[in-house]
Length: 376
Image (cartoon, rainbow, N blue to C red; front, side, top):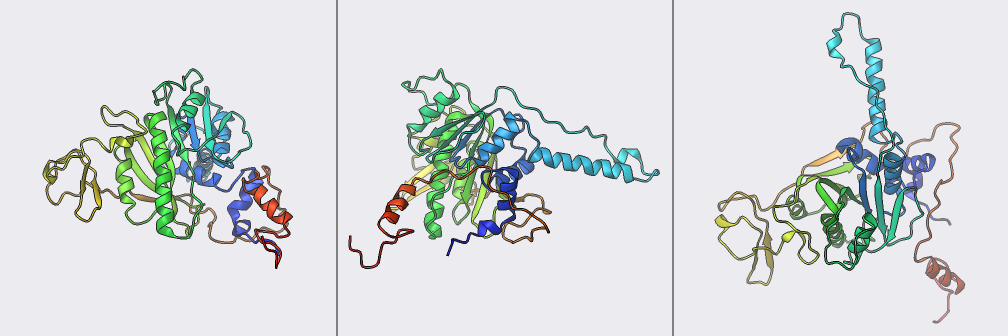
């Protein structure tokens, strides 16, 4: 019996095939853009954990080709609604009730630079520089800096971009085990690696968007992000299944502290001034070793707090984004009569374990199974 996938009953899966997206995750980025206007004034972008390339495909079509998708399509819909109301309004309705709206327009942007990084191979995209690298390894940062600026010297000790970027995206996630506590921890470490890389290439005022698994004690991660970003919001796109613990952390207006310098050994400056001090005097991160061997880390604040100070932990606001008239990702929607399913425009790339599966089949079994009675 063939493998049955829930994705094939998902409306977003079918829409991705028909509209030429490489994966249904493209709609997540488009809905995030509708809510936060991520692409406004953006010309330089880094896409982490990019394979199979749906987010890079959105960037290519919006920034390089100037197509009207995502927020631009939402603006078109809003403009048509304004025209409809204007045409149907009564003559007695004051004209001031309807603002004069200019028709939206989009054009290809100049000097666009997009770099995509992933461990898996990714089919090329127009205008996208693809790198096969591990974002958790320190050697990836010089490789990224050289891709952003060909004049960068990889042998230099500097890890800061001479031409920083406007936006850093990360849609990466580990292979889940089903153990939620472990999955959340591994995902938070992957997000931390993406953030550490973003600190090296992001310009002041830039934006950072990354996938996150929401769970207990995740507010510490939010507070760490608040050190370098003015606004931190957790968003759940409608195309993301409600049954999934995934969400996206949207950080805007990158504002590193005064004197901050990106460091691979000391990200976010977390090791600066961690001496034990009275609580009322703490204005810097504070760390102490308890008697039971557990290390406590508390984030400092600009204001001096007393014993009841709650500035050490911070809860990010949650926002469910996406048009409510859109499809429900957890539901199966009936296809219209006469609907013809289209083949994928972009076939999937070969997984790295494909060769291992082929070797298993040569031994007489499929899906990792061997012949009954065969002894290795």
